[in-house]
Image (tube, rainbow, N blue to C red; front, side, top):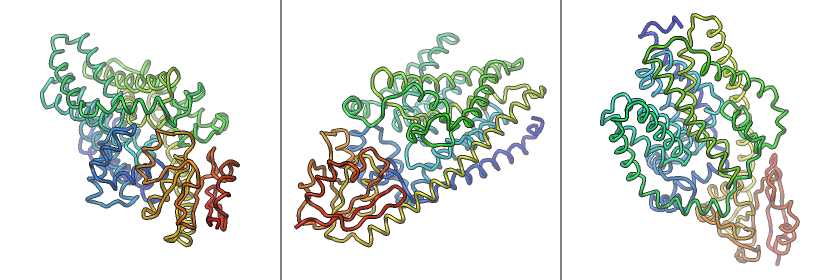
Length: 511
C-alpha cells in the first residue's frame, strides 16, 4: 500500500471516507415508518426521566441509551427522522475513532481498513438507522477495547479512567455490551498474569471502581432475569441458526430467522460468506510476515478482541441452547466494532509485497462492496414499502377515527399496538391478552394500553373500534377463529382494507 506513505494525503483520504461513509449510512435515516421495538423507544422517550428509569428497570435493557436519547430530543425534537439520526451518530463516532485513536495507535493503514470495513459491512446500515441502542453500545465497547489496549501499555490514570467510563457506559447501554466488557477485563487480567504480574493491583482497582459504578443498576438485574426466565419472546435456538449467526454481520437480509426462508435460497450469499471467512482465517493464522514488537502487540490485541467477540456470542448461544433462549442476531451489534477492528488490524499486517496478499484484499473488499450495495438496495425497497403501508393505514384511520372510537389489539408485540398508540395517543387502547403474559404487561403500560381478557371488558360507551393487524403473525387477529367468534359477539365489521399484509378493520358495537 504505497499510497499510504504521505501523511497529509492519508489525512485527506481518511476524512474523505468519513464524510462519504456518513452520507452513505445517513441515507436510510430519512423515512418515518417504524416497527415495534422502534415504537417502544419512540414512546418511552416521551415520558419523564423518572418514568423512563422505572420502565427500563422492569424491562430487559439498561437505561443509558434512553436517557441520552431523551436529552437529544430536547435539542432536535422527537421526529422519527431525528431519532434515526441519533443511531447514526455513534457509527459516525466509530469512524472518528478510526481517524484519531485507531490511527494513532495502529497506523494509517489500519485506520483506512477499519473505516472501509465498517462502512461496507452490511449490518452497519441496520445499526445506523434503527431507533435502538445497538450502535451506541457498539461505540462504547469499541472505545473500551482501545483504552484497555492503551492502559496495558501506559498504566496511566487518564487511560484507566477512560477505560472505566467507557466500560460503564457500555454496561449501562446493553447487556451484551456488558458481556463484551466483562471478557475485555477478563482477558486483560489473563495477559497481565502472563506478562506483567507486578502491575495487577492497579487493574484490580479499576475493576472494583467499575463494580461500584454499576451497583445502582445491579439491583435491577435479578428482577429482569426473572422476567426472562418466566415469559420471554425469543424462540428456541436451532442448530441451523448457528450458520445464520455467522452470516449475520455480512447479511443482506435483515433477519433470516424471522423470514423463515430456507437456507438454500441464500446459497449464493453463503458462498460469498465462505470466501470472506477463508480470507479472515488466512490473515489471522497464515498471512503474517515477520513482525516488529509493536506489530506483534497489535496482532495479539487483534486476536484478543476477536476472542472477546466470539466468547460473548458463544456464551449467549450456549445459554440459549442449554437453559433459556436469550439471543437474537441483532444482539451481536454491540460487539461488532471489535470484529471490524480485528479484521482491519490483521489486514494491515499483511505483507503487501506479495501479490497474493494484494489480491486477497481486493477480493475481500470486492465481496464487501457487492454485499453492501445489495443490502443498500434491499433496505431502500423495504423502507419504501413500509412507508407506503404506514401512509395508507394513517389515511384509512384518520378518515374513520373519531372521539367515539377505541383501538383493539391481540398481539402484544405487533407493529399495530405501537403504531396506534403513537399516532392516536388521546384515544383508548385495549389489548386482549392470553393467559397471564406477565412479561408483556410492562410493555402495555408503556403504551398506555389497557389489558383485557375478554372483549366485553371494553368500555361500552365507545360505539366504534379500529383493529390493525399484521396478517403474517401467528395470532393474526381475525384469522384466529376463537378471537373472531368472541369479537363478533360484541361488534360488526363495517369496513376493511388490506395494505400489503396489514389488515385494518373498522367495527361497530352491536346494540
